[in-house]
Image 1 (cartoon, one colour):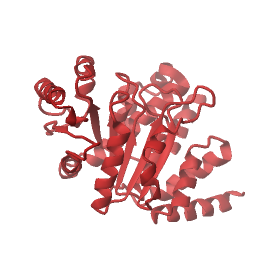
Image 2 (image 1 turned 90 degrees about the vertical axis):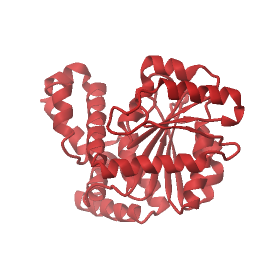
Image 3 (image 1 turned 30 degrees about the vertical axis):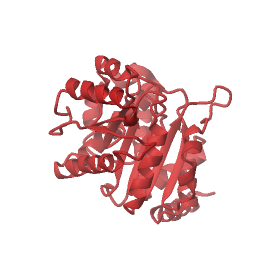
Length: 325
């Protein structure tokens, strides 16, 4: 396919994505996951067209994190039902562990959320974490930008790898940490500093009674009040995805944080910063810390790329071209 034909094809694909065409969305996400040179150029052109209208500030990008077995996928499925009752469309990026044989996603989250797959207002994409520390793969950020163009809610559910699972905090508008009653993990995460990251804390399986109440009390007592991002007192919400308890409150709390970001002028600033952190991680992955230093160091890098948002694939190309000279 020649350059002009590729450009026209990418423009048509972008238009179809904006209308919520499921086949187009699937194709666009597959394109971002394809690192062959021809596909990469089409992916760059696709993002050019999708981002040409400026920031997508009507949609909310949420990160859901927490230790394995805490019930993140069950909670996600329950939240999908609440959002659909509110007539909101939902896109899910479910980051699963990598298969040790194929390297692909094990698709556990898609299986657990199978009932939502028949709803045209819900789109679920399973993605392998490719062994990345931090719980996310490198494709999550550009895929999120695509899904923000066609869904009201975009939720990234991370693989659940424990104390290293903090990349989600620099990849989403709102970070939600899910804790399980009585497991002891929550206080350990507090000691590691990971609970300074979430904007909302959730104690799932609140039907566990006294254990749930004790975990709620521990978390509320351990919190330092305001989130470091700004004037936001971090709430602790009790839910039972199994019994449908606390889900409306959690959805309301997530919406309240999104409105806070918009009213405080933080939303675009946060997304600019998140993209800059994504770029920094890619440069570190490809060129190491020496590559970052050659570009002026991490602090200067984040200032430069955090001042505005553009096409992340083209920005990454710019960095790589400088370092390959």
